Length: 193
Image (tube, one colour):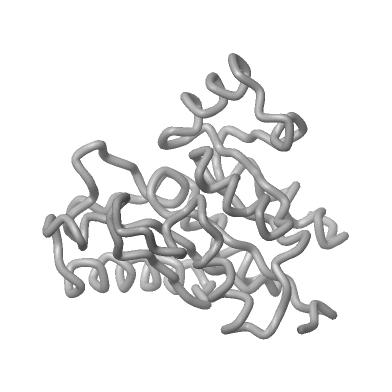
C-alpha cells in the first residue's frame, strides 16, 4: 500500500453532502445538497483529491428504498459535481441494518477497509468528514483524521462531545460545513488554498 502523491478524502453522505432526514432520504427528489457541499467536492477534485463517500444506508435493509433509488441519488451527486468541473471517485455504502452484525456499518471500519483495498492505499492520516460520532469513530479506528461538520446531526454531535468528551475526539476539528472545512482539508496535504 502506498500514499505517495495520492490525496484521498473520505466523506460521509447524509448530513455532510446532502440534507439528512430522521425519516431517511428515500428518493432522488429527497436528496437535496447542503449549500456549498457540491462546490467543495468539485474544488477538492480539481485540486487533485480522490473524493470518496462512505455511507450507512440501512434504509435498503429496512425496505424504505431500493438499489435503483440509491443509485439514482448517487448519479445525481456525481452529475452535480461534474457540472462544477469535478468528479466523484466512488461511493461505498453499507446496506445493512443496525442488528445485522456486519463489519461495514459505521462505526465499524469495513467501508474504510474497502476503500483502502479499492485504491491500494492506507487511510491513515486521511481526512474523514462526518456529522456523527459513528463517522468519526470509524475513521479513528483506521487512523484517519476526523473532521466534524455542524451540518446534519453535527451540531448535536458537537454538543454530545462537549457534555461527555470522548478522549480520542478531544482535539477533533469542527467546522460549520464541508465548504468551511475545505482550507483545512487542503492543508492536511500541505497544499495552499
